[in-house]
Amino acid sequence: MQQKPSSTRAQNIAALIVIVALVALSASFGARYTPGAWYEALNKPWWTPDNGVFAPVWTLLYLSIAGAAWLVWRRVGWRHVAIIVFCVQLILNAAWSYLFFGRHRIDLAFYEILALWLSVLLMLITFWRVRTAAGAMLIPYLLWVAFAAVLNFGIWRANVS
Image 1: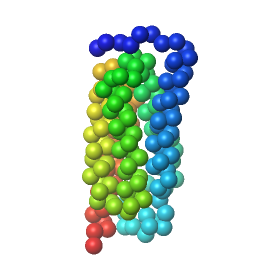
Image 2: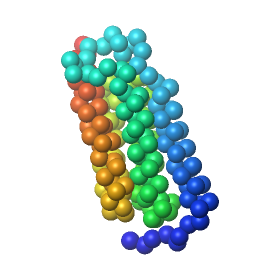
Image 3: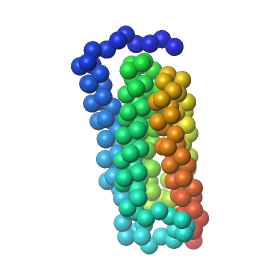
Image 4: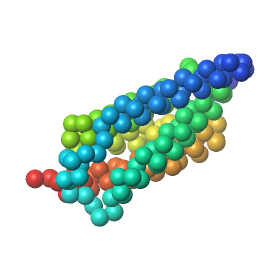
């Protein structure tokens, strides 16, 4: 793997700002579509977490995603498949909230979250190859998206007419 030339402190800070901004953009788009009366009225599995769990968990996950991406950027720069996968998974991450909470399409959201899980797995693998610590930082994210996919499926099945 070819490493990028060393960066100045200003370039490192600028890249961190861009990465945090990209993650925040994805998070804020997804946050526009939140649980409401529609979600509360759904039949949900007994093991569904309380709504108050989601914001702190996602905050920690988004911090990990941004930190891992910055560690990778420091090694390989912007023009690397790992950074492309990072951007794709951010789009898929935001799209799930839109489909599930915004459009109330539990079925499409389930298929979309499978694509998200695959993109997170690919990001974990590509990050791991660049910097092991960055890949390891994504393990909780991969597990959380897997849990969310199972929950999405459970809600879908419990609400099929």
